[in-house]
Image (cartoon, rainbow, N blue to C red; front, side, top):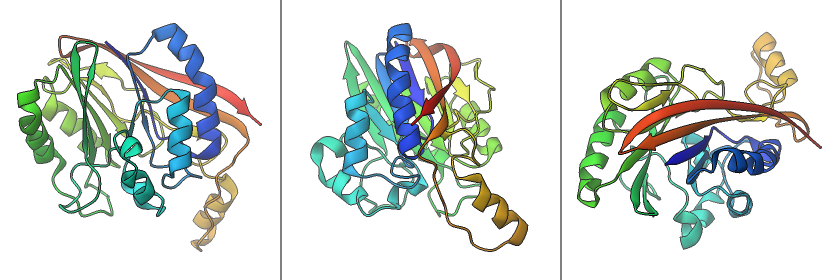
Length: 265
């Protein structure tokens, strides 16, 4: 099985870049499943039904997310739509009572696939539950369904927390990739137990920016410490960061990072 994963897609420029990159990636790798982190889809913060539908039409099968998924009220319209809600998952370790689900179970051909989304706690602003024990609980909960592959988007700030979870889950997860920091770490490897890992897959968004945001206001903020507006470029050079995971018998055989620069008008 081959899984294609896009890191955080940042605004229109990121969406357009992924849409342009996808045909070539499909032709080259023939992925069985395409996953993308959606928390920044709508102009850099949150999701709407329109942007989710746009990326579904482009070929994305499942959307993971993170802390910014709640930044637009339209997320509740997504979760109220049965077809869209079935594609979007939010971190599973949010407190009880939070809308949505943190896991997606699907069958591809003859194989069962479990996609999980977890949120880190180190340096985070969300007082979420322990991602390590949440991982254990989700594995136990879905064990009767016998998933052949377990795929995890760990949306976290600290590299140490991401690495620790990967070692903790080695041999139980097929792949764990980090999102949230928007900067690809390029430390992709397959751990001894058969878990593919990268600390951060990187973003899909404006290349000449500060993690996808217009650089001038951010520089001004660092110089003055005054609030600055968040501006997401819509045109120019975009960077597409993705990983391609090859797996068999529940274990990863390879993980490859991919980066492409695409000009968006």
